[in-house]
Each structure stands twice: as structure tokens, then as C-alpha cells.
Length: 66
Image (tube, rainbow, N blue to C red):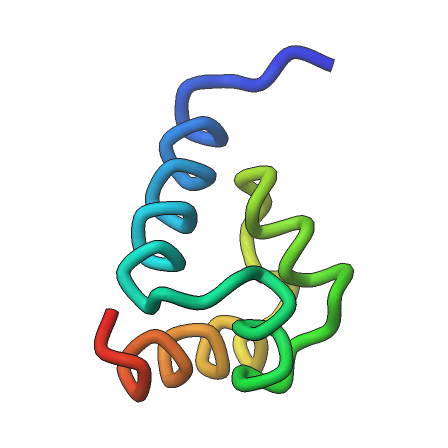
């Protein structure tokens, strides 16, 4: 499956923000309370599947200084 530029941009932004936390995906998943599948999907550039997931993601990044 070919990824479009928006998907690639979302994946790059997630990777940048994750790197800013200094955590691995596993550690970020545990601290954020999001599931492993959600973290995987975000790392591939997918959008959060619900407003609750989006809010949890933003809160985690904010709390972790990213």
C-alpha cells in the first residue's frame, strides 16, 4: 500500500514528538495509556480513531514535554 504525503507527514510528526519524549514506543504506550495497536497505527501515520484517543495522545505528549 502506497502512503500519501499526508500520511507520511503524520508519521514523521509522531516520530518527532515521540523522540522528543526520550521514550521508546513501548514506554510511551505504557505512560499514555493507549494500546500497542494505537501506537503502531499512529507511527504509520494513521489518525487517532476517536476524539478520546486524540485527547489522550495530546495529553501524553504535553505531560511528557513534547
